[in-house]
View (spheres, rainbow, N blue to C red):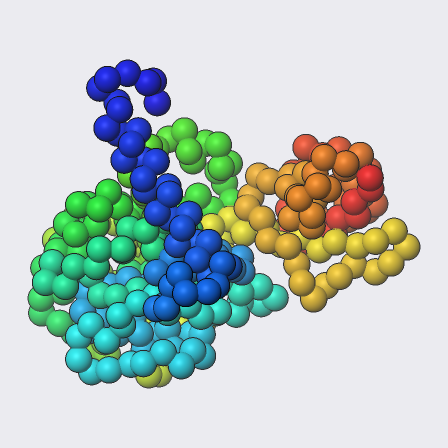
Length: 307
């Protein structure tokens, strides 16, 4: 930001927000008596961090328990979730970190909500379609998030857009934009869910991709992982040592458009500097092809790094 009188306040606000978020992330590492309660910002793990949000009593906590196997408390009353509840959702040989957040509504403000969302890669918006006031609830949720400079967007990068293009296409750089998939719960008595979803989109002015799910029957839950995998443009890369078979148990996860150099930095932060070349097996090159650090990897590639 250009430094002049008109932007002094904005610069100070940005520095303060960065400092607060950094302190939240560092608190679990420091230990001691600095923090006695639960963490309000969850350190990301797995292929991506996904925030689970919704109005009160939308059923998101039940979904979180079913998807992750967590022991989070689930109640029939509103505002059961009081702080971020992380859990890991398996998908093939990777995991997504799902973070269940408190219900979003004007009646129950959560001062630290925006800070918790800063580390998320995307959102699952859970809406109870059995509640006649679901449209009003989601409108209120959008209003609360707008005040916190958080926007839920229907735009997912997927595998067809580079990270640079996605960043260049955005507007206000100080607004957090989170790609969002809507999960409609309690739809058992709805005859035509697709028609109902379309009406909901028209009334709320949102165009989120959506499908019906059930924590009770398991309906639609098996589709969430594959949808997130495609929507976020996840790329799995397996590494190997010269003369050894690849490590198939723990793939490194990147995004579409990232390179061999990104793989090296994931293996070790200093390896990105010392990397001379790599050999690649998979869709991005012929078997054992020697490539440079700028070579873009594809899902399923095996990479052998040479320094």
